[in-house]
Image 1 (tube, protein in one colour):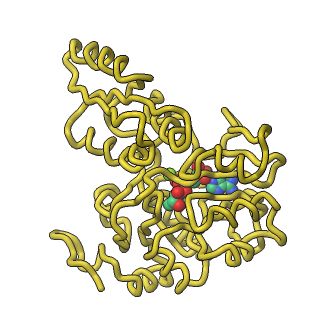
Image 2 (cartoon, helix red, strand yellow):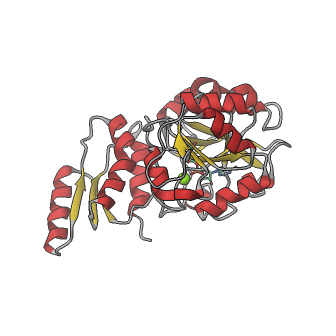
Length: 320
Ligand code: TXA
Ligand code: MG
């Protein structure tokens, strides 16, 4: 069943028609898929031309590898060398389907266009009913980065995707707003101890607990980050200024207003980190739509989902 196409767009460009999404993917096209974290821009991970088109549409450097989305842990095993590293197996059993990506040794099925020639591959089983159905019927893997232009804010609704990519995406599978709102946690399971390369929807504390490691499992920094995790990323058009408290934000906002700037304040409070993560990218987009030139954002505490929200805000605030 498809939803009505929106005005001015080709019929069928958006809807919840899994049959149509399958047809587009099998034909080498691009489909924006809903996941629990953000929308992804998906192509058949085994069709080189389709994967190349993802990079062209996103304007993304070819050495920034893509995560391959699969339907199950059993399916994930077909994309790596056997057996999976113990840490990947342990984390996947506990977190999939869910907002976790594991980096594991790359299997023979993985093409160079997906990994930028690296010998590791990122794998994830997303938790969204429409995409779960799509993956199960598709049978293969879907290479998918977030469905935004390179360096911009990730989309958490089908409307965001259309607003960013327009006709460059062949079909948007509309699964409603994404419930988690920030990208998956990426854990490199090819090193000992495993390393969290990007904080995300599964809190870092949970990863440590699941692996039973009290220390040694840390975030990497600087040049050791995965490619694509540039300091300036996830950026709205407005300038983002960070504050550690509501009081500090009020003072910073007042100073910006004296300079006659259009100022917004993002301060959802420290108590509901799930709501902060869920709303973050929408609020950044709304600030741009409202014509704000400076957004003062209060950082959440560094616990649970707060790590991912702080990471994205710090990148949004980095000088471009
Ligand atoms: O929640 C998510 O992970 C979303 C949804 C759509 O699944 N995807 C996502 O993809 O955020 P993307 O491409 O925007 O971010 C993936 C990050 C990139 O920084 C990429 O460089 C890194 O993961 N990455 C992927 N495969 C890698 C590999 N083999 N080695 C190192 N880094 C890798
Ligand atoms: Mg991205």
